[in-house]
Amino acid sequence: MIHLAGFTCCLGGVALYLLSRRTGRVVKSITKVYNLKDLEQLVEGESKVLPLVIVSGSVGSETPIKCDHSDLLGVFVKKTAEQQVLRRNWRFSWVQDSTFMQPMTKEFPWYLEDGTGCVDVAVSQGEIGLALTVGSDVFEKSEPVSLVQRTLDYLKGLQILGVRRIERIVPIGTPLTVVGEAVKDDMGNVRIQKPEQGPFYVSYIPLDQLFSKLGEWSRRFKYASMGLTVLGVILLTKPVIKYTLKSIEYIRERRLRQRQTKLVVDTAPTPRRAEPNSFGGTSRDSDTPDICVVCLDRKYNTAFVQCGHMCCCITCASQLRT
Image (cartoon, rainbow, N blue to C red):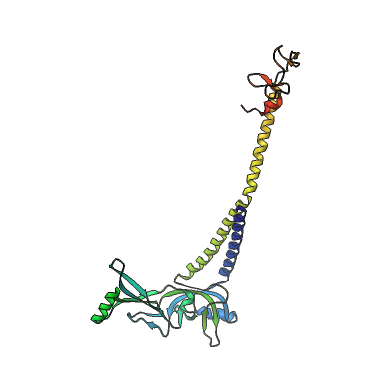
């Protein structure tokens, strides 16, 4: 599982690195146009198609839409209706509830202008996902109904309060920044449209801030790829590091035992000559066998430091810990 996690992190790091490279190339390929009057010359020099440009200006339209409940004019209008009612629950108490009706959207051709020129924007509101401004918010009370109808609704546990209508628009004069493909048609008009490949943005953020924000995403992808790659390498090499540390610890313990054994052998006194005893063996005294007290097989030949007792063979003494 650790190997799989490390491999996945490495693949994610590679994918983010490639994404950062791609985002960086896209940002470098975007042409910033500060004056709309210069856009026509740039498009003409690029054979009537400029792959990616970023422009800013104020929203305008020759046929703007007017809100039904306010004097605001806009190019996109989205109308939503919410029917508010009172329902009786199982406790026989009334609670407020609402039902959303089918929204309705209207949009008309629009353009950007900055005082030096204008450029058409050929895109619908659904493609850009731009947050709309609330143009009007009214509540229409329900019309009075007959006594019989009210009685039937009461028996059903339903009371209609009214309808809340909200209009959201992009007002005329709203400053917008657009990133897209600039094209010059046969009529000589320049428009910005959604490219077949590449980013497309419509935002309220000013031109320079939006451009720097796109470059910031490239840097974020790069740093995230570095972090994932380092994490993946750590997870992949963790078993190897663990095995190496265990091997080093084993070698250190073995060398320590060898030094202890050598120290015991070097400090052991020379055993005196044993004399035959009545048990058929030899001993230092006439009544003590000259054998190891642990294995009772080999002769004792090892002295303990610091007491100086010599009663074990070298094999058994090296295995004693306390």
